[in-house]
Image (tube, rainbow, N blue to C red):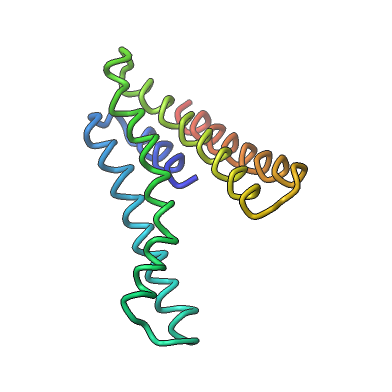
Length: 143
C-alpha cells in the first residue's frame, strides 16, 4: 500500500525521471522500515525488556517486508523504458504491480497464519478494495 501511495503522489507532482522514481520508491520503503523498527524497539519492546543485538536484528528482520514490498514496483519502473512506456505508463505499471503485490502478500500472510480459505479471500478482497481506492485517487487527482 505504501508503494502504491508513493506512485500516486509522484504522479500528481509531474514527470519524474525513471531513476528518481525508482529511488523514491526504494528510499520511502527504507524510511518506513526504519520508522517501524524504531517503533517496535522503543515502543512496546523497551517497556517490556532491554535491548540487545539479537532483539534489534530480530525486529529488523521482522519489519524487512516493508522494504521488500517496494522492490517490485521499483523494478517495474526500471524496466518500463524497455517496454516502451513513458513516465505515465511507468507510473501505471508500478501502481498495478504494487496493488497486485498488496493483494498477494495479504493472501499469503493470512494463509501462513493458518486462516481458512474464506478468510484468505476476505483479506485479499479487502486489500484489493484498498488498492482500487488508491487507483481511484490517482484517477481523480490526475483529471
